[in-house]
Image (cartoon, rainbow, N blue to C red; front, side, top):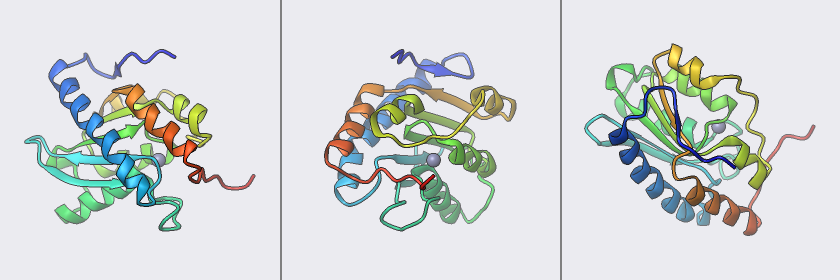
Amino acid sequence: MNNTVIANEEIDQNKLNKAKKIILELQNDLRTYIANGSGPFLAAIYDEKGNLIAKAANSVVSEKCSHNHAEMNTIKAAEKALDTYDLSSHNLSLYVTAEPCMMCLGGIMWSGIREVYYGVPSKSVETITGFDEGFKPDWLNEFKNRNITVYGNIEVEAGENVLREYVALGHTVYQPER
Ligand SMILES: [Zn+2]
């Protein structure tokens, strides 16, 4: 699989290096979250000064809610922390261990998040775990049109290893019946 970093702007090495560090930390922290019953995805939102605003894992199974993906939980926590439904003026960046799914793309778009950095690409998530990530035609360009910067395929191998561990441990890969 081609794991070259992709972006919808010319790659800024400083942004990428910062993202590599944060995503690698998230991949490592994720093991503890999984051990405590979370799903295998973790997200964090930072402001431009590097302050952590919110951090949350997937809690679909533990909280019995199909919307509780890591990105959605983190956005909800950030909006609560900053007491707003529109994060735009706070210039926030979302970092997440895997590519956002179809639902989370919508959640991110409507939140006012300015930048998105993700680890493992959806195809790889689907191959390793069996989760369905949805259909997402040309979303990097759609986000660019909405002034949302995206960098993807960051620290892919480290992220894939955590997903393989999740499956090997026999944790739930939830899907609606079809
Ligand atoms: Zn999602």
